[in-house]
Amino acid sequence: MFLVGAIAVSIIMMIMPKLLAPKKPNKEKLTTYECGNETIGRTWLGFKSNYFMYALVFAAFDVETVFLYPWALTFQKLGTFAFVEMFVFILILLVGFWYAWKEGALEWM
Picture 1: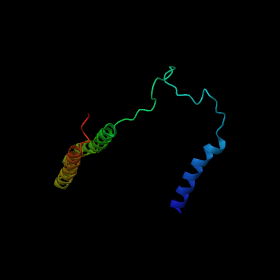
Picture 2: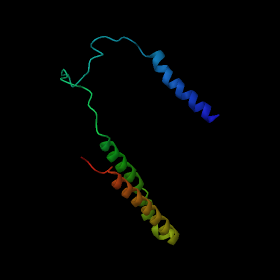
Picture 3: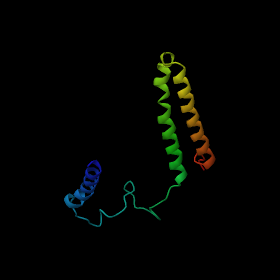
Picture 4: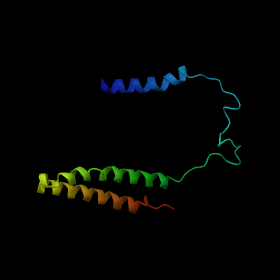
C-alpha cells in the first residue's frame, strides 16, 4: 500500500504543474538570463564530475563525523564495547576515505 501511495503521489506531483502552471511563453522569457547581460558564445558549460565527487565525499564524511560527538560525551558511561564499536566505525570511514582517494575523487584538478 505504501509503495502504491508513494508512486501515486509522485505521479500526481509531476502532473499537477503541467496542468495548473500558466503557459504564456514569449521571446523574452525564452532568452538566457546572465545578470542582465546578453550572453556571448556557448551558454551551457559543463562542470567536471570530479567537483561533484569531491563535494559528495566531503558531505558524507562530514555527516559521519557528527556521530563522534555524542559518543565522546558519553564515552565513560558506555564502556569497552562502545570503544570497540567506534573503532570499527572509524575503520570503516578510513576504508571509505582510502577508496575515494584511490579512485581519484579527492583530486581537484
